[in-house]
Image (tube, rainbow, N blue to C red; front, side, top):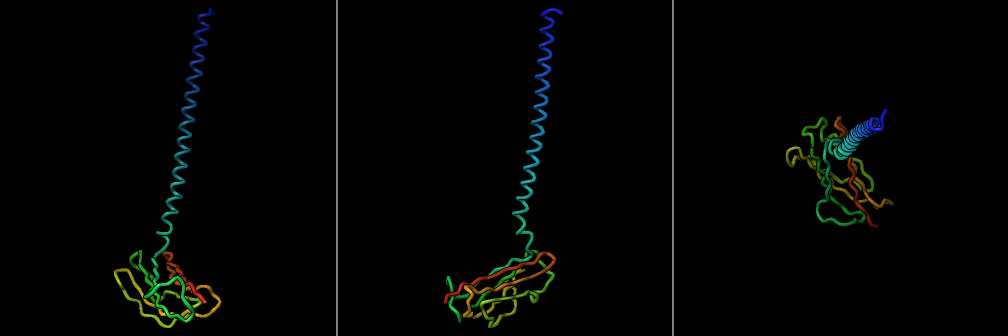
Amino acid sequence: MGPQKLLNVANKLINYEISSKQNHNLKDSRRNADIKWKEIMIISFFLLCTVLQPIVSQACELKFAISGEQKESYKAGEELIIEVTIVYTHRTCEIQLSDTKFTYEGMKILGATAWKEKAPNTFSRQIKISLLADALPEARLNIVRKCSKDGVVGTFKISKTS
């Protein structure tokens, strides 16, 4: 074999090696792109679940407000009116408003109104309380509504001063 033929064969081998490596690199870059795409999809899915979870999980929206003058903290013996509002986010609810469970600490319930519909799917009631002179730094009104759509749990805290 002459030197020219040997040189041609060597060039063909080099070109074959280069094109083979380029093909391999192309396959690697496609594989890396597929992996990156999958990573982006997985991260996006978890972010979407994290953002939507609070929206999807609660069947009701719960709001609390003190009627009248609002302060940073209140003294024992002060009487307050707390307005509790429930908004149905699924339009209908399988449990009655009367099935709403109230628990409390650091306060005494003096009375409450019946639930009233303020707007479509929005109900409120007022609860009159008196703060107790106990060791607790805050009074709490807890509300629980359990249903198959996860319901809602809420706590309203009132800071107390001695």
